[in-house]
Length: 251
Ligand SMILES: Nc1ncnc2c1ncn2[C@@H]1O[C@H](COP(=O)(O)OP(=O)(O)OP(=O)(O)O)[C@@H](O)[C@H]1O
Ligand SMILES: [Mg+2]
Image 1 (cartoon, helix red, strand yellow):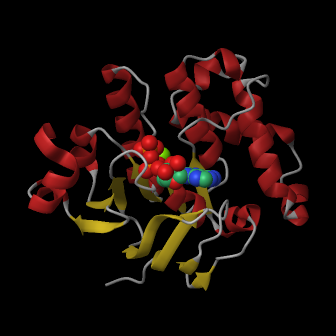
Image 2 (cartoon, protein in one colour):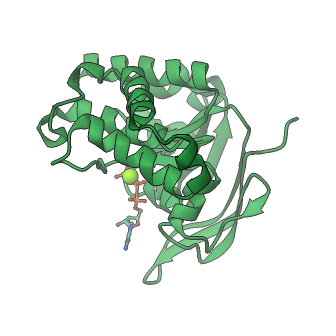
C-alpha cells in the first residue's frame, strides 16, 4: 500500500461547546477520487476548514505528506500543495475570468521569486491561465466579468482558481450544488477528466448520490458526530447503518 497523502488522526471539533464531530480518523491514498457524504450540518465543510487551516481542531492531527499541518496558516498549507474549491464560490466578481486565474498564478509564484524571474513573461502566465480555463470549459468566457457568469460557470471558475495553485490534493465542496442536472453531469465529466489527466488526488463533498456512487473510488460518511462508514460505493450503498442514518429511500 502506498503511503497516505493525507492522514486524519483522532480529529475533534466543537463550536462553543457544541461538538461537531469527535475522534475522526481516516487515510487518503495518493491519486484517490473519493467522496464525503452526510446530512446537512454533519460537519463536512468544517472538516475541509480544518484540513485547509481555516479552523484549528480541538484535538487531533492532520498529516499532509508526512507533516502535521495543524496550526499552520492556510496560505502555507496551499504552498505545500493543497487547494480547495468552495461551497460558496471564492472568486473576485469584478475581475474578468482570465484575471481571476492570472492573479492566482502570480500569487502562487510570488513566494518563489527566482521562479517569477524565470517566468518573467506575462505571456507565459496568460498561456498557462488559458490552459486552465480550457480545462474547466471557460476559455471562451475569458474576458467576461466573473460576477456576471451563470452560477454553474462561477463554480467552474472556482475550480479553475484552485487548479491555478497546482495542488497535489484538491478538496471540492459541493462542486455541482445549484446546477441544473445537465450542467451537473458536464461538470462531473470535467472533474473526472481533470483527475484522469492531472493525477491530482481529489476529495469532494456531495449530496447527489448518483454522482457519488457513479464516480467515487471510496465514500466516507460523516454522521452522528463520527465517521460512520468508509468504503467503496457498492459497500456504502448497501450499508444498513448508512441507509438508516442518511440514504433512506434515496438508493
Ligand atoms: N464558524 C462556525 N462557528 C460556529 N458554528 C459553526 C461554524 N461553522 C460551522 N458551524 C456549525 O457546525 C455544524 C457543521 O457545519 P458544516 O457547515 O460543517 O456542515 P456541513 O456538513 O458542511 O453541512 P451542509 O451539507 O449543509 O453544507 C453546523 O451545526 C454549523 O452550524
Ligand atoms: Mg457544507
